[in-house]
Length: 491
Ligand code: FUL
Image 1 (cartoon, rainbow, N blue to C red):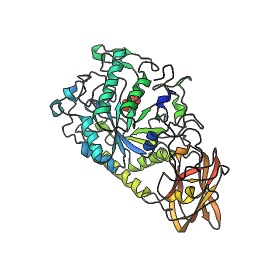
Image 2: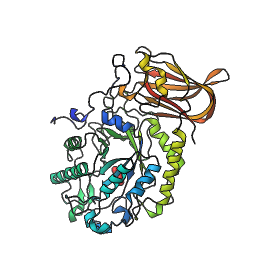
Image 3: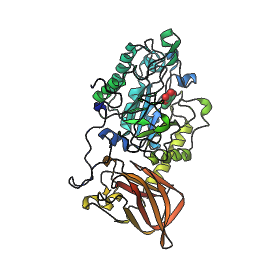
Image 4: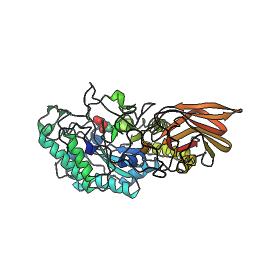
C-alpha cells in the first residue's frame, strides 16, 4: 500500500510493466504514452459481452429495490443457466457479468455475510446458488465470467458505517474465491440515499471519496484475481463511457485522466461524465471505455417491456458506436420470472449474432497484395495487417508519421465496412486517418476518422465496389503501428 496517494494514482493499481510486442526486439518502435496492462490487453480482445440483471426486482417489477423485499419472493422456478448462457453465446457474447447483488442488497449466492440471500428464498428450497450455476454454465460454454457487486446496499443495517465496508469486502472475497476465474469486477456509482437499512427506513448519505476505501478494496481484487479488470466510473482498469445508451464518442481515446464532476479528484460516483465518452488525448493513464446499455428500456425484466426489445439492427448500430470506436459493448439481457431469457430477447440476440458473424466472418482484403510507403523492416511488413493476428503489426520508421498502404484486391470487390486496429501495446499513436478507393482511374475518398485504438469500424454510407483501397495515415503523434486491416460486407 502507498498511504496518502489518491485513488487513481496508487502505483500498485496502475498498469504493470510494458508488454512484449510484435516483431524483433531490437527494431520495435518505442511505445508512445500510456499502454495497456496485460489484463487490459486480454480484455480488449473480448469486445462484446453481457450483463444479467436479476434479483427480487424481477418479481416486484422495480428497477431499484428499497431493501425491504421479502427474500421468499425470489423463485425463478424454471431457472436454466445453460439456456441463458447459450442464448448469450448465440448473440456473439464473449463474457457474462452477473448482478450478484444490486442496490436492494439481495445476494444471489448463499453468502455468509447476511441472511438476505437465496438461502431465504423459495427457489430450490433455499439450496440454490445463481452465481455458481451461471459461472459454471459460462465456463462450460466458453464465456468468461464477471461479477457486479453494488456498493450501495439498501438492506444492510450497517450501511453508512465502517462495518458495512468490511461486509462488502467479505462479499467480494467470497465471489472472488469460490467461483473460479473472474475477468471483470464491476462497481456502479449509485451511492447512498433512502433505504430500509435493517428497518431504520431513512436516508443515508456517504462521502463518495472516502467511505468505501476503494484503494484497499481494489488491492483485494488484485490479490485474489490478478487477471480481472476492475470497472468503475474511473477505472482503475476500465472506465464508464458516461452514458447508459451504449454509445462512445465518435472520437474516443483509450487514455483518460478523469476529473470530478465539479473539478478536483474523480472517484466512483463523482466524475465529469461529459468527458468520459471522449477520454483524454495524450492522457497519462490507459483507461479504455465500456459502453453499457440494456436490450430493453429497463435493466430488469418487466412484462410490459416485452415488446420493447432492441432489434438486431439496433444492436448492430450500437456495436458500431461502441466497439467500432475502440470501446467495449456491454449488453444487458435480464432474465424473467421463470429464470430464462424472454423469447423476444433470445430472438434478438440470435439475429444480432448472425449479423456479426455474417459481416465479420470473412476479411475481403485477406488475399490482397499490399504495398506500404514505409516499413521499419521485415518483422513489421505490411502483410502483417492481413494475417488475422493482433500480435503482429505493420510499423513505419520513426520519421514516417504519415505513411500509407495500398491494398490491391486483385479483382473488383464490394464492401461497406472497414476495420482498422492499432498495435495498442505501443500506445495510441494515430490521430487521424483516411480510406480511399480507386475509381475511374483516380483515388476517391471513402471515409475519414480520428482515434483508432483497439478497433475502429468505418461504416460507409453505401457499399462500394473497387479493386484497390488505400489506407492513409493523415496525422499521428508517433510513427504508426497497426495490427489489422479488414474490409467487410454487412450481411
Ligand atoms: C447503475 C444502477 O443504478 C442501475 O440500476 C444499473 O445497475 C446500471 C448498470 O448501473 O448504476
